[in-house]
Image (cartoon, rainbow, N blue to C red; front, side, top):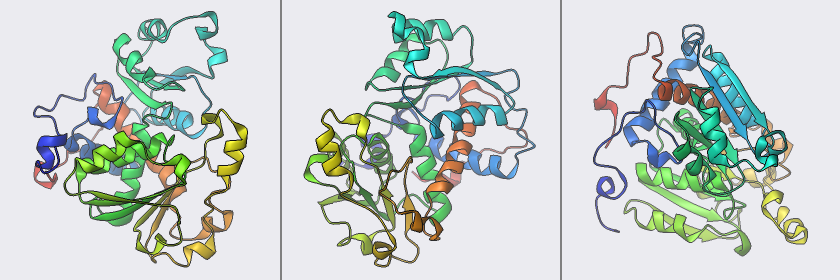
Length: 337
């Protein structure tokens, strides 16, 4: 595949409409549709009152089989700000899975109640199973260590806000690159846009999976390097994407404790970085970014939270087919191939 034009490698020949579509990975959306979501999010941010009744009468189900604060509240707030309503659960112990009900049966049931579903599950592939069983659109809110597409939309919106582009960047990803689903989603999507140099910073035990590296290798305009030392490369980065070492992904607590403090970003390290570098983090953090960095203008991780809500508003309204009042679609001439 290497050496083929990017469009023939990664983009489908025919774009399918967004209405009624499930989004399990961002490969389910075309580049044009992703850019349309970015455009819609910008419009929503400056027209909060105008869009407040866009999804009136709609219901979102948030089916969260593992703990979440930001993602669940973001999905729910997005629908509420569009005028819709929300039902759901937060924790498998609150669902009929404790009685042995399958994901497929849960989705077949819930589809009768709602217009769109957001699901988070600890097992990779669970969101795909859910989408095949459901009769309404399903959005993957994170499935194990696999993918987290709406976090990636938040990341892209933050890059667009900070740099005015999502290409021609050197992007460092630091920490848990093995289990970090946000990292996998972001790398794969940036490869579709092209012209990104990835710097993968991790200990040997938490290196980037081969299937993600294969995606970079299949993209002629993208490249990567793997390093262990953050300070040695921080000065080269336009973006530093920090991640936490996820305790819930480890079977051995000794391994977790040994790796947890491998990378801690503080002002001393930030002194080596570019003046306009952006620091991103999917949150929650443990101790991998010192609190002192929060006041640095390069810290963009709380901006990501806002962008995540805006992108989910854009996505939810699009999947159910509700038009934002006063919104004009992105001019096709503005969409880069």
